[in-house]
Length: 378
Image 1 (spheres, rainbow, N blue to C red):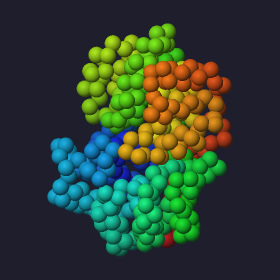
Image 2 (spheres, one colour; image 1 turned 180 degrees about the vertical axis):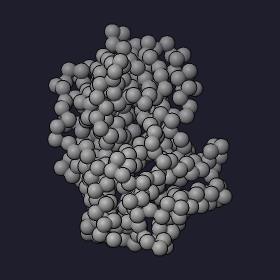
Image 3 (cartoon, helix red, strand yellow; image 1 turned 45 degrees about the vertical axis):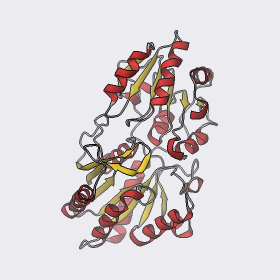
Image 4 (tube, rainbow, N blue to C red; image 1 turned 90 degrees about the horizontal axis):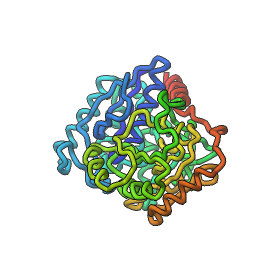
């Protein structure tokens, strides 16, 4: 079975990371997979053995997802966007996939609707139309207007066979963040959480006993890092380590190093998930992949949900985790060095959390669902 996954990450790298995990799950059982990525390269992610097609990249202008910046940092013009669309449709024509997966669209990435609709039209025009699936995380950014949900419904109804919801329905259902019509409800397939296998311990026990501060792979989290640098001064007996992501990580680390904080500063690391097993406390935002990493590792954690630009997704996710042992929540409006230290100390005192009861086999289940649907089409 041939599979094409189309994904564009615009701010962080969680969408691309999840696409890589899905791709590996298809490959593991003998399917041919290509990932067409439309975001900026993310070298901190492990892309080994991934057949990766890099489109002319885009990123958002901060949290303004209506302003898309090209590779040179200028606003992407029609010519640049057309080159992406051509490359994406060419990938489809060359592979002739049995399964096409669009990550997040049409529930998000509305600023890229033109290229996604061109891809969907091209897929429906192939000699053998592929099974078409949308792949979405547990919690979405709720639509700001009812018509946004209506438009997504129309696209789903016209083009898609099913929607893969990467959540354990016993924990979080799509209705928690998105209006689910009867039509949409009939197309939902809950897969469980999409996560790579648990990382296990680090061979050198990196991060042991530390407060490990991270903000994903994108160029976000500066307020969190700045607060952590000051908080580390208030806890001199506890080592703090900040893992700084983004293409500008080197510049940010240089600036942070001038604060006089005792915290260790490093670029984001590929072995971050293994480090979590040894950390005294993780301090992070609450993106999908980070939340799953924490659940798998059982790490005590302080969550500071990203809420710039009226984002609500991470806050909803953090609220769903708050009842579990070892999770402390600090809203960005309440973030201060003292508040962060208090939350870290509270997480340190909490009972150790276990990961039992959660389904992390969402990637394998996604493969099974895709294969079932492809088999039904013949």
